[in-house]
Structures are given as structure tokens and as C-alpha cells.
Length: 366
Image (cartoon, rainbow, N blue to C red; front, side, top):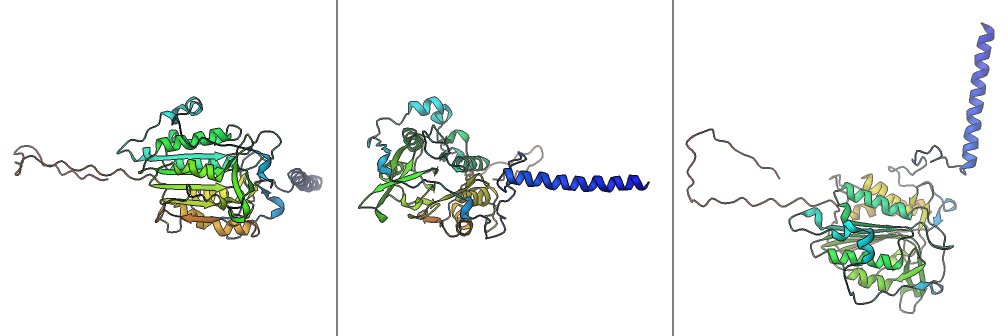
């Protein structure tokens, strides 16, 4: 009896020692972060949504852009005049989006989005770790709200070349009108070239997957063609607030930027997103933590307000998001309810009630 009890005690001690040893090996292999080691995809050390303090530090955050002078890269110059609103590339690879239409009286048909997220770049350009996921998470969230999948053009990684990005924006411009609600999102590298006319002496550009740069003036001209009642433009990239050309900043639009004109933006490998995307889209919108007034809907402004200080705290004040709100109020992403159909009036001024059968009162709810 004593021998059996002693054996059980020894076995328990050995099991504990082995467990601690396994944990130590796991942490050593993951650099101290065992968040996805079990293959669950969950983020064990993600910041608590109820806290305003982040858990990150600059030592474990990667800048989205390897800083450099854009003059050494190719510049994409889209034709100023649009010869055709139809793109053979969109028609081939996004046939459902190419065929999609906006229909009067069908609210969901007036919601459109172009979402761009680039992790993988051609050549030796450094990869990102969360830009693609930012775009994917936003696409999933919009579809949960009722946005149609064929009204969303999601452009990821290597196919997100400069010409394809411009084609996508022109697709957007061809589909929308003054009653549309529109989202344009870009997450990826940014670069710049010297300019005597821009703030800080830098003209910024989004860095396409084929290592060509679309400078802000070209981007502003293309986005300026998009018609909408409300439009949200979201930039998760370095020096994000530099994308402020007149074609982008217009009445009815809300622009959110992950950083100021002079700051880097950061990603966290353990979150698998950019820091700004994590707090604004994943926690703020999808998690509904940004729903400040508890009305069950998260506005773009609420999501930004939720993310702003959290991003600054998480990056040790290295990154400060910026907003420009020209929408004249709260911008909702939820699908508007259909307008009630007008009741038809009787042709007789004094309708004669039926003399037979039971009388039924019908209540119609909208």
C-alpha cells in the first residue's frame, strides 16, 4: 500500500516536471509567444478590450514600411481620361463584381467597397504580416452587415498590382452614384519622393505589389471620380495622413488614417493584423466594443474613437491615428431599411364594407 502511494506521488511529480519542460520548450520555439502554437488561430496575449492600455512594445512591432526614397521605384501613371469603364482584368477574375448593378428600391445594392491588403510583394521587398488580414476582416464584417459579396472587390497580395488597383477604383466609380455608400480601404507599404509643394517635403504613394508606386495626386484623381452619398476612406500604412489630396477629401466623406504624416504605422505578428486594424475593425467594429451609445450599430467615427488612444498606448506613443470627417454626421455601415411602400387609395370616396364574412384588421410592420 505504501509502495503504491509512493509510486503515485513520484508519478505526479514527474508529470508536473514534464509539463513545465514542455511549456519551456514551446515558449523558446515561439519566442515567448505561444498564441498560435496549438494551431487554434486564437491570440492568447491580445490586448483586453476593456482596458485602454495595450500590451505591446516597439520591440515586437514591425513597421509597415521599410523607409526609403520612392524615386528609385517605378511610378504608375494612369491615363487621366478613362477610355472605358470596363476592365478586361475585372471581367475575367471578378465576373460577379463586373456584372453587379445598383437597383433603385433595393438598399443593399447601393453599398460598394474596394478593399486592398498586401502582405506579399514581388522581388525582395519586405513582406507585411497583417495588411492582408486587415482587408479580409473588414470584408467579413461588411458581409455580416448585409453587404453583397459581389459589391465588394477584395484585392490581396501579388494580384494587387498598380494597374489592378486603378482598375478596381475605376470599377467602383462605374458602379456608384450619388445615393451610394462606399468604402475604400488600403493596407500595405507606402513610399515617398521629395516634393516642394507637399507638407514635410514628401509626396506619398501607395506601394503596389509589383513595386510600382501610385502617388497621391494620381490616387486622388481616381478616387475623386467615385460618386457617393457617404464614403469612408481608410489608410493603414506609414505616413497615412499624407493621403489628403482634394480628390480624396470631399463633402460626404470620412477619412481615417492609421498615423500622422510623419509617423510609421505598425503591425503586431501576434495579432496577425496592423495595430490600427486590430483596434478599429477587429475589436471596435466586429467585436462591437466601439458601440459607445449602445444602439447596436458601430459608426466609422465610433470605431476611430475607440482605436485612437489604444493605438497610441500600444505603440508607446509612436503612432497616432488621424480622422478627417466631412460626412456631416455619423457614418453608418449598416444597410438602410427599405422605405415602406405607399398604401394605395381606394377609387371610391365612400367604400362600401362587405356585408358577408368576418371583418379582419391587418397590421403591417415595417
